[in-house]
Image (cartoon, rainbow, N blue to C red; front, side, top):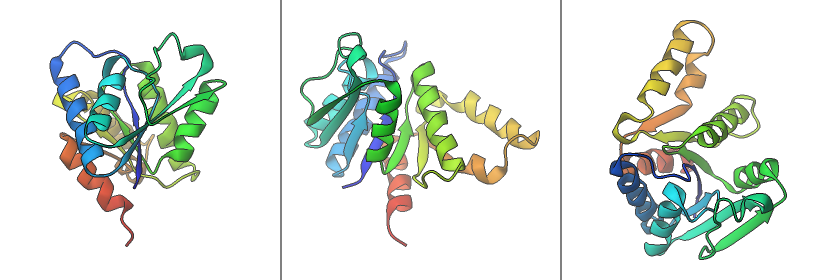
Length: 183
């Protein structure tokens, strides 16, 4: 049962399509027998994802620093809620438990976690797949910017290709499953 670490917003965003796609991903994770690893909140897209995984019969593991348990409103209905000392321990714990990383729409925290995981992959600290669920083109401007980094010589094409994107939950999970299956 692969563990899929998902970075996403503790807010829902302005378009209902973000929540709908998040719930679809959660149901797919649960139905396909994967385990969710995420930030542990019960609000926003984070809560919607965990609830959907659990509704589909899956397992959801949340990781949250003590100082955020009240602020981010920890989800106490999870398979497991791991309380840690700080954000560094949170990200390290999530990364240690992950077999793959996925980013959904979110704010600066989501982007920071995505880029840190991708940087760790680039530095050879892990070889786990990394992808974004590009709901309604949410990540398209970022992906275009990353392509421009390649064309301007600041990022090599292989590293850019290590960050994949998919428009739907099934396409994203199909891609991750291919990457995670033994050759």
